[in-house]
Image (cartoon, rainbow, N blue to C red):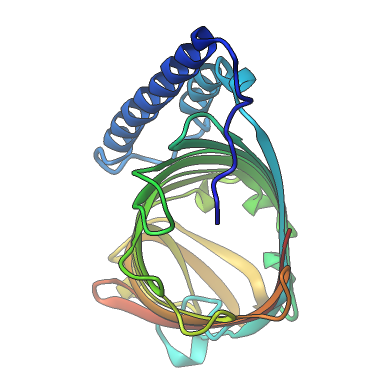
Length: 333
C-alpha cells in the first residue's frame, strides 16, 4: 500500500527543516520512554498498587502533545462480539470442584492515529467491553478505558520490523461489586515479517488491578509470542504461546489443608452457589498456555474468528487446567 504524505508540502525550506527536527525529537522521546518504562516494570515483583500510577501516561502525553500540530489524524473503529467458553471457570485442581460456563463477550474500540514522523505513530483510543455469563453472574462485567500507544517502524514497507509501547487505564464493574476496580496495563510489543505470508510477534505486559476489596487485587507479568500465517488473502492462522507469573484465584470446596500451606489469603464465596459453599484462595501462580486461532475475512470490513487455548497454572503442588474456546464476529473500519 503506498504511503500517504505525512505533512502538507511546504514551499519554504525552513518548514521542511522544522518537520525533520520534530520527527527526530519524537523518535528520541519514544526510544527513551521505552527504555525507562520497560526497566521500571521489570523490577522486583511488587505488592498490588492501591493507587494506579498514571505518571508515565501523563508525562508521555504532555511530551507528545507538543508535536500534534504537525500530525495527521486517522480514525479507526474495531468491534467484535461472540461466545466464549471456559471449561474450568473456578480454576479448581479437583475434578469435582470444577465449574464450567460460557459467556457472551463484546468489545468496542475507537482509535485516532497521528503520524508524528515518517516512522513514529501515536494512537489514542477509548474502549468499552463487557461479558455476560450464563450460570455464574458474579463474573458479569462491563468496563471502559483509555489508552495511548507509540508505534515505531524501523524502515519502510510491510516487512519492516516495528515496536509498540502502549499504556491503558480503565475501570471494570462486576456484578459482584467487591471485584470491581481500576485496571492498568503497560504493553511492549514488537514484530517482524519474515516473508509476504509469515510474521513473528512477541511482547511483554505488566498488569495491575486494584479492586474495591483488597482480596481481589491482581498483579502479573506476561510474556507472549505468536506466529502469524496468511494462508490465503482471506484466511489467517495464528499459533501462540503465553507465560504469566502473577496473582491467581483458585476456588475449592473446603477443607483444603494442602492449599492452606500455600497461602493465608482466603475468603468464603457464594460465587458458585451456597451448597456446597466454595472458598476462594488467592496465591501467586505460573501459567503456560498454547493457542491456535483462525480468522476468515467475509468482506473488507467483516470477518469471523475461531480460537482455542489450553492453559496450565501451577503453584506446587496445586495445579489446574483450562480449556478456552471462542467464536466471534469482528468488524473493522
